[in-house]
Image (cartoon, rainbow, N blue to C red; front, side, top):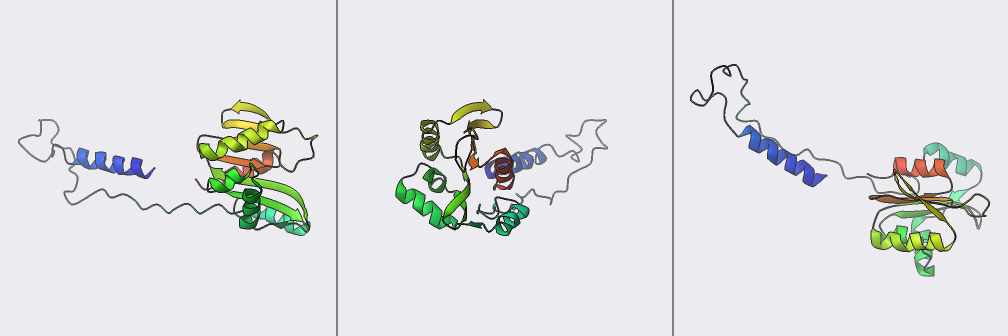
Length: 186
C-alpha cells in the first residue's frame, strides 16, 4: 500500500508539473479560464499509522471478552500457548511462526475454544492446511478463500479455518471466525 501511495504521489507530481496553463505561449485559445495550480503546492505522502498488532484480546469483541469472564473462562497468554504448540510441533504453530497469534480460552485446565489469526505466509500455512486435511477436515473454495471445516459432530474446539491471499484465521464457528477477521489488523 505504501508503494502504491508513493507511486500515486509521484504520478500526481509529474502531472502537475506538465504544461503550465498560465503560460500564454502554450495555452490554447479557449482554455484561458483554466485554473492554475499553485506553484508552491507539493504533494506529500500522508503518514499512515502502523496497524495495531493482533492480540487475543483485540481480535474479538469486548462483549465476547466479557462473556468469557462471566463464564469463568480466561484466555491463556498467547505467548505461552503459542510456545507450547511450537514445542510440541503441533501444526497450529504455523500461526505463531507466521507472525500471528494462537488463542486458547480455558476454564481451569480444559480448553473450551481456540481462535487464531496470522498474515498469510505460504510456508507456514501449508503445514496447517495439511494438518487439517489429515484430521478429516473438508475444504471448499469460497470467494473469501479456502474454507476448511470440521463437522459439529466432532468434539473439537475449532471448526472453521479460512486461508485467503493475505491472511489465515481459525475459530470455533462462522460467527467467531467473522469476528476475528473483522478485528484483524489490515
